Length: 387
Ligand SMILES: [Fe+2]
Image (cartoon, rainbow, N blue to C red; front, side):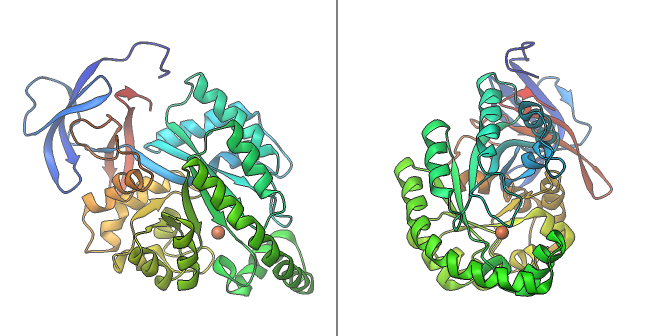
């Protein structure tokens, strides 16, 4: 399980498997050596291997936006769990969900009305760093800083973070009411009113104040964050883009990934300028957005869905990939699997993984279908069994 523990077999063969290749499904076998896929074939394997009993083999999933670590670290309001213990429990859940590459999405920037993480960002960073340095993790972990652009401390936090720890992705979030995710103010009232026990009058006053202050903060912070990403070669993502103007601004900033565009127009505009469109897997499974925005399956029907992300439920990624062809008849299973493997790999420049193809890393998942539900049976990362 751990890299430094028991030696793992140098090479092995998976046989009697339904292999999901980038453009086809074949019944056959694959051979792994020194952490890479070396050969694939149809029909019977040339040598005996692990009999998969007809189970499906897909590439290890690649998750670009999960905030699930926070629920292990802060399992109750004001309760904080052992940071490394939280990271390890989270990592185990990630791997058991078939995810072999994960971008841990950590909130940077204190939203005074949200559940602030503030400087605890660094506590989590230290735990992740320890896990990486000592090879304690099952999945490969990259860092995605989810930056709340109108937060007063966001630029300082990100500068300090990037000076110490590697950052692979930065997303630019702006949850100011009256736009993007909260364009419809009734959703904001539901989210902040009910969640925080405020009256409508209190929420209204908060909205007016926020809109006034945030415009200035965004004007200052956004270019500073874009400059940090550019100077360090960090992949930039937009978040909740809603209008064509939002997308134009994203494109001009060098954004490569659109996280959760809230309208068809924003998704189409992203596609038109070569930005990868990512939607939430829970949105697809639940049949719509929890904030009342465009449904993932609607974008998929329009051919505008490139990447799925588990967002707040790690196991949703595998479920959504297998459910997608049933929801949208024009999408094949290989295409659906690409939304959680090859497409996120390409969007983030990870050219060594994301497909069952000779020469690529042996990040593999054995899946059995129980009815329509995909059940993860075995997971390998670079040829090593991790779940
Ligand atoms: Fe959002």
